[in-house]
Every structure is written in C-alpha cells, then in structure tokens.
Length: 104
Image (tube, rainbow, N blue to C red; front, side, top):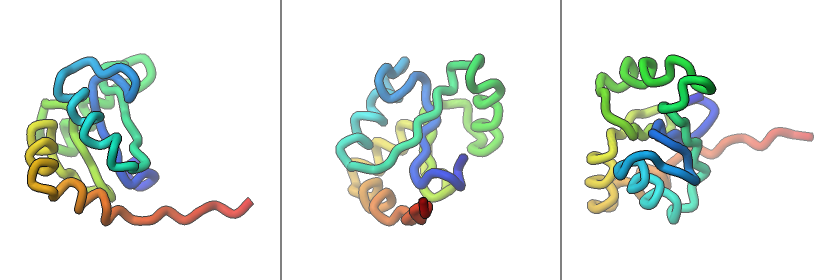
C-alpha cells in the first residue's frame, strides 16, 4: 500500500465521513493541496482487519491519523498540523514521487 500510493493517511473514518476531530483536521489540511490521497479507515475491522496493529508496528504509536508520504512516516495528527503551520507539509507533499502511468 505504501509503495502503491504517494500519500497515505491511516485514519478513523474516510474522506467523506471522519470519525475524530484529528482525522477531520487532517483531511481538511490535505484536501486543498490537490494530492492524490489514499485514506485507509482503521476503524473498519470488517474491510481492513488488523490494519490498526500494522499501523502501530510501522509508527510505534497508537494515535490516529498517521500520515505517510513516499513510504516515509511524517507523523500523527498533531505532527501533521505542526508541519502544515510551518509549511513543511506542503513541501513534503509537493516532493512526492510521480507514479508512472500504465500503458493501455
């Protein structure tokens, strides 16, 4: 998943309906940046069984949301907001790797 998408947000809820204040704030910050964002609902065990444990192993944190850009963990919701305020988030997301287009 982290290899398939430049920007991945592990969150509670989805892009349309966020279940926590921090997940909503993360979507609010990332959406206007125009990035191809892959959101993964970690609260939906039916469709994403065990995903919360995997995120914890990758980040050593229990908190959601967690943001990855180009496979690199940028941080949780609080860190994401800090990066946004400093301008570092736009810079990191702007430097995302271009994905090769598949030939038809």
